[in-house]
Length: 468
Image (cartoon, rainbow, N blue to C red; front, side, top):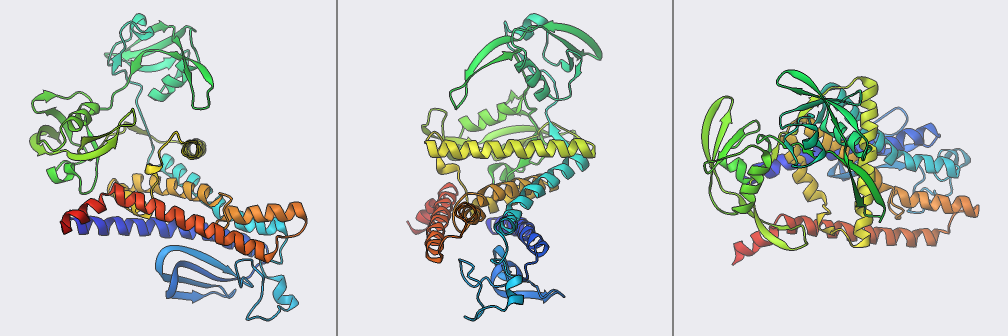
């Protein structure tokens, strides 16, 4: 796949993702507005001149516009940023006033504004629930890859290759279940049933106590068993335009050896590539039972090390096969989807907090270019990965829109909260100044994340090479 083809594929995937999420977001505003008796004049996907549209029986113009980077719902009487509610400079009639947005109560206006981010959150839950029910949830089998010497697991008699099927009478299906149960039982004996060579064996282990301090300074006491699970040396995904794609690696390939050295886990592949940036590697692979030899050259890439130092490492551009998939019933799938959204929400707020505190770099923030690139990569990985990514972006769209910044939905909600407390809205001039500040903040953020995208994609290095 050449650069132009790869760019076109990523752009198409990005536009599909963006169109769906914008439609979902604006549909939330539209439905609640109509529910509260507000006349909606325009429902647009994109900005600028209209490409195609139609007007429904309620007078709403549904249209696609030329600039596909967002969308909007225009409500009757919205003449300016403060929603003064005039039409062509004239006062509205009582009938017209009754169907305007600004004539509604504070609670109604807040509900209409909140509906956009809220439906993005619900959409994420629905997408993940459908994926978990129809395709299945990816999980790590509870198979022991290695046992730490002199650990609780070693003393109990666990061995590499054991599959843990039960702990204290509780069925275990995932390695994550093992970690969760063990963490909650420091210095407490647990009964473990493992499957070894086709038969089940009962063992007893006492997880050792360990303490760690989280990012908030809280000390936690947890149990450690001393077993690990390694990912198999199998290619799960190949990044477009990567060294792996140029070499001909494909999802499903099992890497048997690198330069004659056997590989037993995916980490062996990553480590070999990392240590050899720009050097040619000879990979022996198994593809559908046929052994092949492939030569690949890890691409030199600048990355930040564990201690904050920058170094050049080799990257092949492959991802591991992420375990197996387990289908859930409707209720279980919904519960797992809700759990997933809560976990992602917590992780997002934690990351934002760390950026404000200065303990996390802002270089990982990405904008439209990065999202477009990732959309292409996820789409190439299959329907499952693309829709999982769509749900993830929908959830983040909800969170970002709720930030209390004028121009965003959260800024409107902040104004309504002030109006509810004061008993009257802020003056039009105060609202206009607030929106100007909000616009400046949003544009500054867009410039910053776009700069990050260009730096991370090494666009400036490419331009410099072309003109030097």
